[in-house]
Length: 134
Image 1 (cartoon, one colour):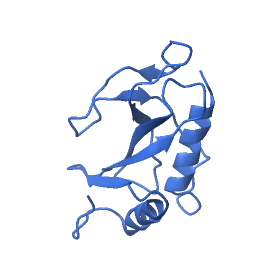
Image 2: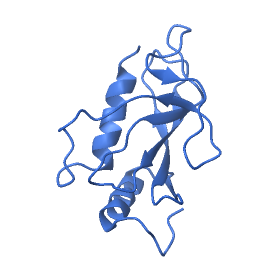
Image 3: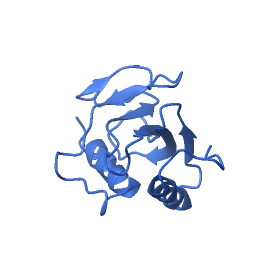
């Protein structure tokens, strides 16, 4: 939940509010480190073991200079009965008591700009990974 006294950068707050305008159930939980956990429902393309997941990612305390890195989903996903490539089955999300399937996924070096990119950029990147049924 976004508190009235936030340690987040103004752009982080504005970007989350824009995200929440499109994904009304999106939630943000500020963490002790100054990072934030973003949680939202995420529709999946055909081919996965589920049609919808809860997707979570960390907005680092250096956002927007640094992009999010990796994401977690519940329930755990499979493709053709096998775990997806570059995933971990059930690690705990840092600074939380939540364990979920982690996708190791990153914005390529040099392709993120704090002046141009935002949480929608990150979600498009997550969608690109999910569309790879591997």
